[in-house]
Image (cartoon, rainbow, N blue to C red; front, side):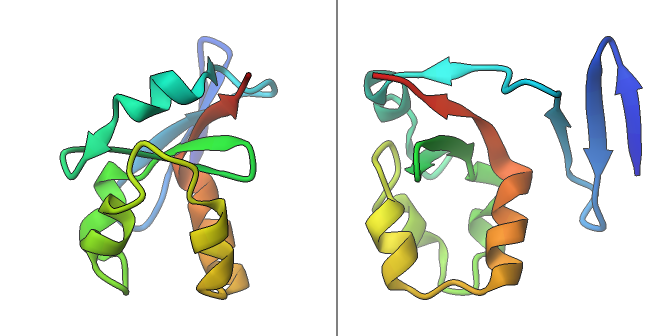
Length: 103
C-alpha cells in the first residue's frame, strides 16, 4: 500500500515494514556518515552511490546476516555485484534506500 503524509509517500510491504519515499531523495550522506552505522543493530551500506539502511533486513538475508554486517558502514557495491544478485533482490533493495552518497 501507499499513502502520502506531509509530502512523503509511505509504503508498506508484505512483511509489514514501512519506508518513506519522496519525489526527491530526502537525504545526502558522506562516507563518514555511513561509517558510523557499522554494527548488526545499526547497519548501513553504500551500493552504487546510494545509501541503504539494511538493519531490518539482516535476519531475512538468504546468505545470512554476517555477509552484510561485514560490509556495514562501507561501500558494498563490489560485494553486491560479485554475488550476482537477482532482479528481485535488486528490487527489494530499493525498500531500504535512505539517501545518496555525496563527496
